[in-house]
Image (tube, rainbow, N blue to C red; front, side, top):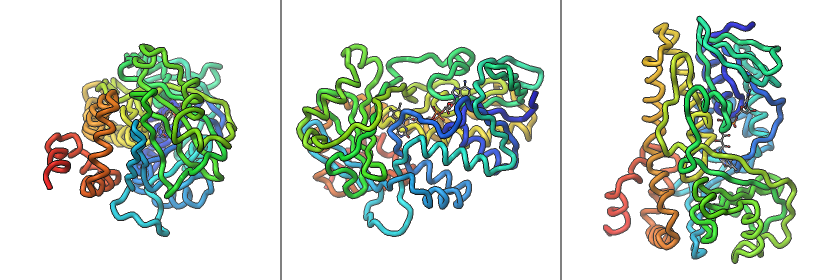
Length: 412
Ligand SMILES: Cc1cc2nc3c(=O)[nH]c(=O)nc-3n(C[C@H](O)[C@H](O)[C@H](O)COP(=O)(O)OP(=O)(O)OC[C@H]3O[C@@H](n4cnc5c(N)ncnc54)[C@H](O)[C@@H]3O)c2cc1C
């Protein structure tokens, strides 16, 4: 029986971010995962500046070690392709010049990136890492929560439980009551290809809004060694309504879609096509209770527009660690004290989620997407502001304001 202040279940990005932040705050923790690493996770593998910003804030040496490994390709911007094929390329910084500085984003296969993160956890003396430990039983104890592995080998009695076991978290569903809501949930498939034509030009990732896949999107994210992560995702309620088969559509798109079929003519599929769920953050949900917090996908924090979840997993992990520090100082783990965690999650991620949800609804109308792509690409000022927003989070809030669009698009 291990007794600890903090037991983190799940050592994906949310769990490792929590553990690392706790470690740097001087708070020991137990970090358990059912997998043996390296392990795969179905994902688009795009790592945004949220992740690099937070890792850098924790310890610049981590990012230096990451940059020194050959497991990532740099990302300097996004190329959007509208349903009418119009392309809109937005660099991540307005006057971007590819220089020796670290890139603002990356693409790195999760099998590699998550292994890198686990090795960072291994470097810290005050993180007790328990791999191949499938936590299945939870019950309240006098201290907080008693958890036990499926085989009964491991028992952890913790004052705080941080649940970071991903989109299929049983604790999140059964104890915290976060049911899957198909209107706030997406599904996506991912495959690895080699030899895709014209990939990674200018180190941009590509999002294609294709009429037949409306309101979802198809992506091509360039990886090292000429590989690419290629995938397709859509909101779950619309998938069922349209009886849309993501796997079949992925192949139809690459075989038939103008602008793509040529690029895939000599491409080779080098993996299985795998699918997984994305619990979207478009609906505010309770993410804490007495002696526990949910983080990452277990807290339903995936961006409803882009499907980006790693950055928000990191943010929630950092906030969870800082909340635990407050609980220890105040010796208060009550549900009412824990509300501060929910409030901070909402403050940090809420406005972005609301904006993404509004834009996601707009994708239902290809004509609108075409028109917006045209308006933005023909307006240099808007392009510059949108570029700045990628790294300047406060600027992003302006996007949610109709007046901003009016000012940008119509006032010369
Ligand atoms: C197809 C697809 C494409 C995506 N593309 C992107 C993208 O390009 N960029 C991006 O930022 N996000 C993307 N996402 C979302 C991203 O994958 C998730 O948001 C992110 O992985 C969440 O991290 P997490 O740590 O919360 O959960 P996970 O990464 O799922 O980690 C959960 C961990 O918990 C462990 N675990 C599960 N059950 C137990 C248990 N019982 N006991 C112990 N351990 C357990 C698992 O082994 C795993 O290691 C995509 C998702 C999908 C499905």
